[in-house]
Image (cartoon, rainbow, N blue to C red):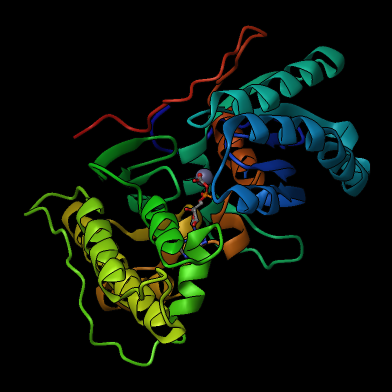
Length: 357
Ligand code: KG4
Ligand code: ZN
């Protein structure tokens, strides 16, 4: 389906959603792609903090451990709505194969027992559709208007996408090396900050006194592509230069370096997203993915969008990072467009979004 409204299903519009692509075990119940009826996210952050990053096999085993409790909690929170669920939406990719398979097999089991159709969902499309979600009790607001430009910035992806209508994504640009979140995580580790680096760098940067250090920005000419590996290398060199013989940095230096690094990432993300919105005649800008939880990025984008006279739609931080409600939102539009998977559904670790320009 491209553009326009999704076909009405005539049913309750209740979609149960399952997300296990990376390190959050998440289950949610979402009505008509917008209203969150229940949402549970079991985070593995504490486990992966111990190893300084995600160990895929451990992540898959943790999903196995948490998927049933998360599901039971959503069932308890759902109340009467439980009996009216129409379909189960599940992330098919991209992500870690072993992690994806836990969610996929769980969705298959539900499909067998309850007879629900399975709706396969692209995790990246889910990050965009988080902008449609309404929390319980949140006042109704209009859905994002088309055409729009979406910046998806997560641990694995950094991409600019144009949407002319529902499920109609066109890739405008993407990272040629590291994802923005990956760069945050790596620089956070070099600075001796805890995992995940994104929030840790953001909090450290807030304490920076000197704010005049400038790290490079990769503008990549006229292109809407991104590159963060040069910035990462520049940050590493500076960290090594300033570190004492024991490799440790004084806290003031950590804050200043975190600030300079974050400023460079935010600058490039904001300038390119605003340019993409202008070039494509967008009527709104959407941010999604874990890095969209970054406060300076949100503030900078809000100012830029206001200058262009465009609404900026950024989900609250808990809906920017991985969750199942966003899969329930995208899943509803996919479901209404007729997307169905059989019991042979397999994980698609390298699934992409939108055809390249
Ligand atoms: O979307 P997400 O939860 O998982 C993936 O699909 O990758 O994104 C996780 C990424 C991590 O790299 C994390 O460090 C980053 O999002 N992140 C942030 C912030 N919160 C999470 N980066 C910068 N500032 C934040 N506040
Ligand atoms: Zn994600």
